[in-house]
Length: 231
Image (cartoon, rainbow, N blue to C red; front, side):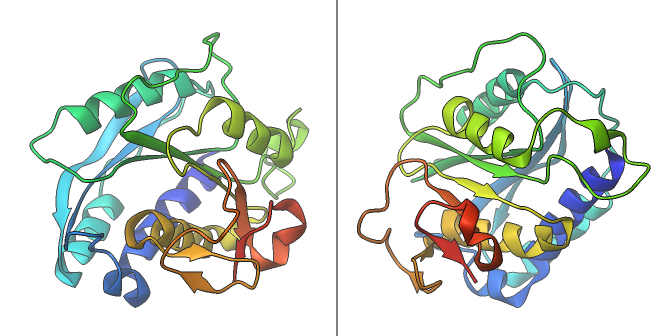
């Protein structure tokens, strides 16, 4: 829905403006390159913010402002993870920057329904992480109130058919109120390398036993996670 999609975009805007992100947004070599793509069905995607270098707090503010003011995307109601992965793969391999880590952050609240099989990227340097939003948003008038999938269904789909590559994971969000906080935590893992452990503490490397494709949650939702979560 537009409500959930707006909450998602607002969550990324807010995350880039939070001081904690600005202190840890430079990655392992002092800066990162970021683009933001919104998507829906087959060949339905738009690059809301083209590639931008983020090195200082001012860069993060500018990116957040640009994303906030970007044209709104009108989804079709279809979901093509295959299509958006193909587009994101092209964007990440065909730009003017050379990154030491290549990460695609794909988010949504439903599985592929456009008739495609999952896309497995050929370039082993790319990691695809998943961010799963509540499958059935709150609100009596929400068109997703009769949605056949649960959030757990979508998480399992992303684990088997979306997320892939070295160190990949899926971050699960169970309530809309937690979107902003969860997005920040996910970005800290991807950019700063701050992994959570079973005590909710930050670490500079994956904890012992950090397995491929774990489910990461906020602390209050830890019953739905595999081993690790964030406070």
